[in-house]
Image (cartoon, rainbow, N blue to C red; front, side, top):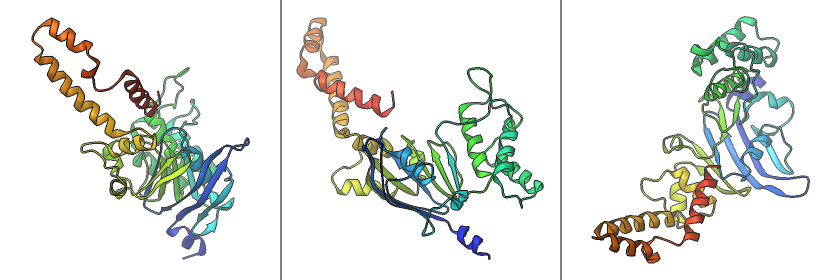
Length: 307
């Protein structure tokens, strides 16, 4: 096996004490560290403005960190090593006039080494079309929603992933993805995954205002927060629970509000006459919380959903 093959056989991307500041000195990331291993998936979660995308751009070599180091297999990242990386941005950048197959083929043609034959490039394109379920739209134009009807947003995301995977990266970085690959080291940002998706993660990095709130096994995150006094309520999506904590929103309050609302509904049903119901509704003590607290709760929910 050649030195090159040894280097990429078991790729490990690590980042150490990453910090980043804007030109005016505002700190966005504060000493964030982690490891992405081959065949493993690391999810980077956090509320809006927590620094997820900034960190991903630094790992991809698209932005220079203010402090810290990014390494592949223990070696500091350099220009030559960037060929081992694939980066899928949150906003898909695709030519609207080309077909799905043409977009992937073009990416293969310009990014594969010159010693890769035309036949091998075609096979790689076919593999990505099949792996990402693009067979039925391979001849469809990408399209532009403002000018030309084309494929859906989810299909565009899969095309973007195929365009990166076709050059066989060892590390795949995705900003708010819908698909991935189990054969490479994968790190991606995600705002609020479903409970089912959350339990597929290997590693979890939780960011809060640019700082590490948790880094480790995704399965161990619930036990960690329970040990420090923040137990996830039963039947609650862990991802939603973590985002509530990171946003400074007390999830226990929401559970208490729901219980109080149930009690209020039962009491209202017991009110026999219309006069009794009007009297009940006029009494502020019969409501779960004050208007101000209700507004804070609603605002927190809207902020988490990015409204």
